[in-house]
Length: 211
Figure 1 (cartoon, rainbow, N blue to C red):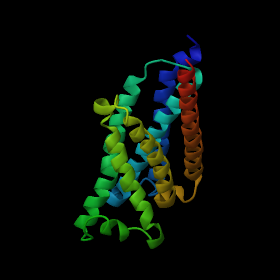
Figure 2 (tube, rainbow, N blue to C red; figure 1 turned 90 degrees about the vertical axis):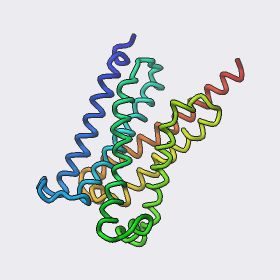
Figure 3 (cartoon, rainbow, N blue to C red; figure 1 turned 180 degrees about the vertical axis):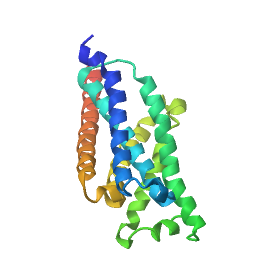
C-alpha cells in the first residue's frame, strides 16, 4: 500500500481539527474573545462555520480517495464528524429561531426577515432549504441502495454550494479579514471536488456500459 494512502486517516483527522480550529479562532476574534458577552446571537454563527467546514473535509477526503484509488477505511471519521455536523446544522438555525421568538419576532420566515438586510432575505431561504436536504441525506442508511437515492446525493452537492454562498453573504466573519480567503479556498476546492466527482462517475458509467 502506498504510504501516502496509508496515512490518509491521519490526514483526515488532522484536516478536521485544523478547519474546526480556524472556525473557532475567527469566531472568537469577532468579539475579541470576551466570552462574557457571548449570547445566542453571537454563539449560533460558529455552529454554521463548523458544520460547513467539517462537511467540506468530507468532500476533500472523497476527492483524495478518488484521485489515489484508496480504499482505506475512514468510516469512523465520517461517522463521528457526521454527528457533529448533524448537531451543528440543527442548532445553528435552531438557536436563532428560538432567540428571535423569545425576543418577540415570531417564527420564520418573518423572524429571519427582520434579522437580515432586505436585499439578502432570500439568502436565508437557501440555508433553510439546504438544512432539509442535509437532514434527508441522514436517511442514507435506510434508502442508500435505492435507485432514486442518487438524486438526494446530487441535491446535497447543490446544498453545499448554496451554504457556501449563504455563509459568504450573511456571515459576519466572512465580510473582511483573513478568513474570507479561507472561505474562498473552501469554495474553489469544493467546486473542483464536485466536478471531479461527476466526471469520475460519468467515466465509470461509460466503462460499465462497454464492459
